Amino acid sequence: MLDKKPIYQFQIGDRIEITSVELRDDVMRRRLLDLGFVPGATIEIVQKSPLGDPIAFKVFNTTIALRQEESSFIYAKKVHKEVV
Image 1 (cartoon, rainbow, N blue to C red):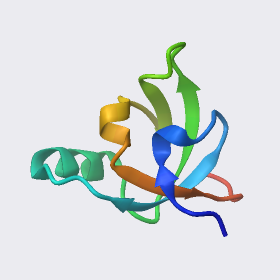
Image 2: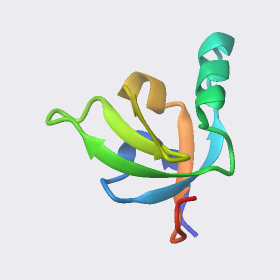
Image 3: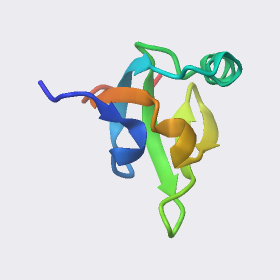
Image 4: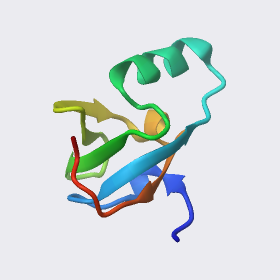
């Protein structure tokens, strides 16, 4: 089993399962949870900008772009199942 790491460290096309959201800012944490970045959710890395920031993630059939600043507090592990 692979160790968890921040979601910005995965590559385009990777399917990952969120293991934790470790933000201390309650407003931003609530916003990310509302967008679908919840533990147990399977997401896909769709696209990275040429400089690597921001990164587009497919979350429950919606594409959401996050900056590295935000995505560095969301941890995940790589999985090999289909995104629903």
